[in-house]
Length: 306
Image (tube, rainbow, N blue to C red; front, side, top):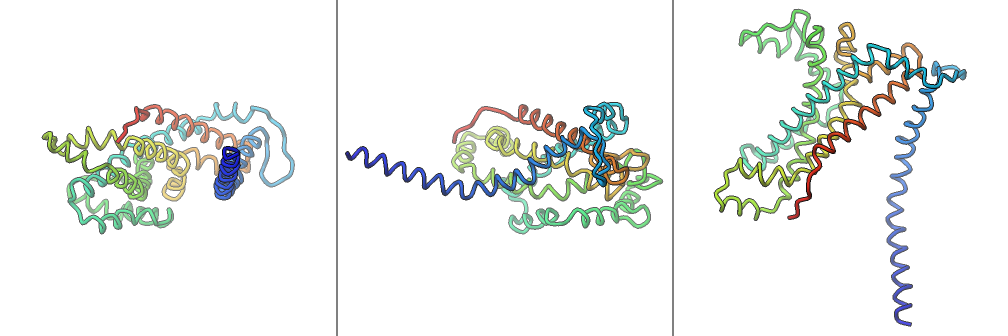
């Protein structure tokens, strides 16, 4: 009898816990479905049609938009540019943010709290403000970058950093790195500070230098955070690089800085080819998923228990 009463009590507690969890989970799932899953499936659906985005007339094309996609040279140029941006952003963002996190935790070179706030400040700025600041820095007439380079004897491109065929694409990357580094820095700071101090004390007792601590204590234990940050950098790069390109170069000169996002908006809102633009959006989605899986495979490692 007692066993039966306990079972009923456990069952009620289980239902209460599940009900409590569902109360918080269902709104999140509903929002995710509404703003993520439904748009994805709508995009895939529209990519099978020829549609202006204005009229109600939609002509079914099957996979013709994808055939056109593979034969479009601008698409491949834009995809290559996206991959270049993602690779450069990934390398520099992780290196800079991890270095800053180490300086603020293990080396304690800076005034900790003050510099955390200063370095995080660009994260709070809008992309429009960030691009305005960097456009002024890149200005060929009065920009601070050209003034600094002229002092050390380096000549800037004659057409300016944003107008030169060889530098326009790469000039859109520093603003993106600058405004996101603080976010990843805080993630690494949190991960490093969560490592038990006893591990560092043991390492020092064994005669380990600070560099040995970083290599054999810190890096293995923050591997999950490195994995998350790497994947998030790539996802944000593939999905938001077009904002910086759009505001800084608009894909020019001569499509040299075109990325998939800008080419998608060009086809959708300027040429009114929403079906083809949706096919480009599907390519962005597939490319992002593939890159994320590759990075997850690279960073996957054995679990370290503290």
